[in-house]
Length: 276
Image 1 (cartoon, one colour):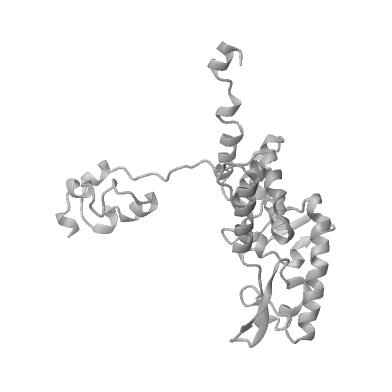
Image 2 (cartoon, rainbow, N blue to C red):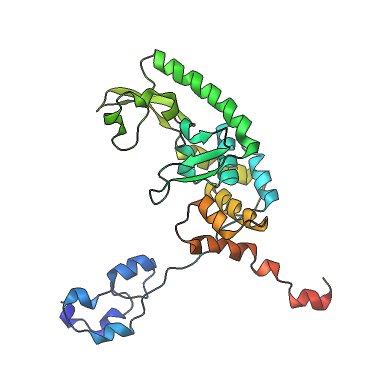
């Protein structure tokens, strides 16, 4: 069939290989014919432009908007919101945080197995340090109660549970934000606690944004965008922000410079002319 396809067929609107369809660029790129895979000489393929992935600027809240949203959060969602904004954590990175990865002495948080299966280190904000410590006191009491009831297990990464059978009950491996209910794991016959489900934070942030009255479509990840943008506004270099965010390529971090030093940083000629 590829031998019978011509340039007009590929570029015809509505054809599965057409670049005019309303689908993602990655989907269209995966559909385009590649001569080296066809074992045919198709010179007209050189004239077909591969669609580029669109670049969308992130939604960023001002400092006052962040403060307004946080004021409408309470309990665990507030602690998570402070970690999203104060440490640049992603939603699941916050939900999956383990007790041993919060270093109160060094004021650090170790993010394990983040996006791209990478570990990284970020700061433990001083403004949330005492609240996290108080929260963990309650979590520890709950864990001790679980142990007495024959439970107290958590899921361990990879094959660690087979190598260290009792590690799943140790305090250091417990979730900082555990679920409210236990569940029964059939394979191991353990009564475990999962980490807090991410929808708890998502619903709370959505309601806080609504109650704060800000017009932006802010979500949990918007705190992370704001974290990066505000660090750049405070004069921290792009490489430092890249490491804190865990970006592989600095080009990904550079998008925040467009938000930070974009059109808003330029004085309009109309303002200069009219003296605004």
